[in-house]
Length: 316
Length: 231
Image (cartoon, rainbow over all chains, first blue to last red):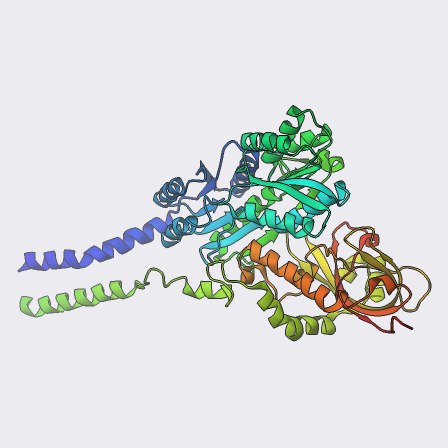
């Protein structure tokens, strides 16, 4: 009889055991922030990762730095790692606007707050905060300067970023919202070069052959601007305006050499730092203290004269 | 003795068990976020379906113009205040928009004589001399056809990025507001004849932290001719 009682007691206590184990693990939280970015090669993303890491460490967190290579499956694996490591927060530049929300939801379900930077997700309530560059405002600044440099007229080309990335569309729309209002500006070609320098180079090579009288090329990001500029030089031309977007150091250098004509500086270091700061605040107080989830940070037009004033996406 | 204690222990254990279970809250997966998603307002839950033109139609007469009529300050008053004490004037008249570098939006109104219409750029502007008329240009108002910036969208607190959805929709909204203003108030004006005539305007300008007051450009949301162009 006593035996039976002990068995019953043990059986009844099983859920209690789970409860205490669970409670215990929450208390000994890892102090680990998992910082996830798309790519190790693009300086835009490394600057973002570095800024987030530095801020997190200055606030006393350990960090785990990972890249997903724009692959939602890799991103999913990383989220699993973050969950098993009991991360206190995930700071992420997402892989894919359509697939990432489901990955991030799993982190949420495991009790890990998520903070997005740079790329946005369109589902509310998954991220505690989204720190986004105002790509449209930035593209309008770039578009206005482009039109000004061309004297409000001429044949122009647009190189567009990766279509799965919302920001590619946003920037394109921002450019067109300005440039299309000038009837003497004629777009002769529009191609996606997938954010890639080599694709931009080969695309521009053939576009230049087909259209000898191009006055300007406006690009969805800086790496494509570098590719376009190289194609112009290879074709022996030097009077074509090239605009980039991001503000990466290579483009700033090119501007200082009188090659690329302008770019738009994204506050991406700021986005990363704010994401970590809000995560820290959320961990400590249970709230980010912001009245909305999505926070837009403004971009800056960079003309050649300003190029020496910025490095690593930060004003010197 | 034993026989009496055993059921008691069992009962206690059962009570303890239910206490443990009841301490957990059962949440159906998928339900837990519904409250938050509601904050994305009626416009969008998935980031699609926002119709900027419909939204503008809904707010223009009912919310936007009234907000301006209620909060717009005389342009010359705002500018003088900014010249005198920038910080104080921003606090008194400005709407601070928190972004990376904060900027400020001022809603203004005035009655002025058009000194000149400059259409050398597609981003055409009129230069105006505010009352009392002294022959000096006091303000620049952009009249297009290209309207730059997103000042109208950013000028009222009830338009929030989070509520609208994503950047494309938020951008659409800014354009649509600019278009609505042009359609209602700029297109009916004969800008080539407007020099020397008196207008009343309602609008806003954006000021950045280190921006000079000389670079202030007003985006109107309403411009009306006070006298007849024939006169």
